[in-house]
Length: 231
Image 1 (tube, rainbow, N blue to C red):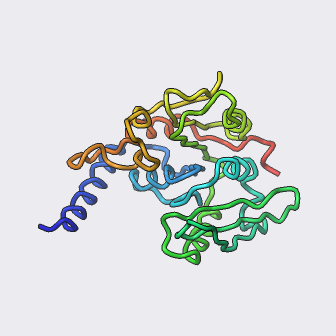
Image 2: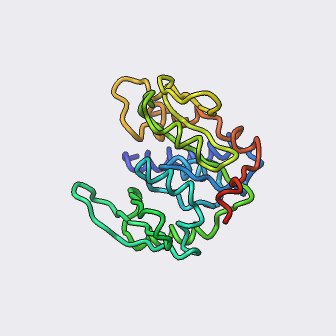
């Protein structure tokens, strides 16, 4: 058996294992708004339909919080337009999302796991229309320690979601009243962004992400957008 065949076999076994492990998930119609691939991996591992456009992509931090705080204004239903742009050093599709309202800035979407901008745009608009406003949560993943003077804690607390969590290092400073999950993977020597989504060893089916009990998090409540955003 060659290496490609072994990789395919491991991927199939991994999916079966995650579907079995996550069979306790009851909240199966949830929209997860995330700043990177964490939402897509959770959807995939749980065998869920993608009810969020934040799949297979990442945002710059402040762009993400601007998007999350103004979710409806950045939707295609409200006239937001997504066009392709280019940036030196970026080989995958990149989009600029411009809302109809002149009061809000255009934001960048880095479609890292799409083969073309056309497909990325199609999926973004399709999944934006699936957002479940009656069952929504926000997950912000930050692999680097959040410093005391970082704007992230304030931006996170201001995000109008009743159910939200930061996934980060134990060395992060997030302040009181913030739900935080500290994962040991971020403190491994030579940690690189993306390692969270890899398996713990060549023979393991478990990802480092599995140290976050996302099934318990999703089952706990059906989150809402707070009234200020529903306009």
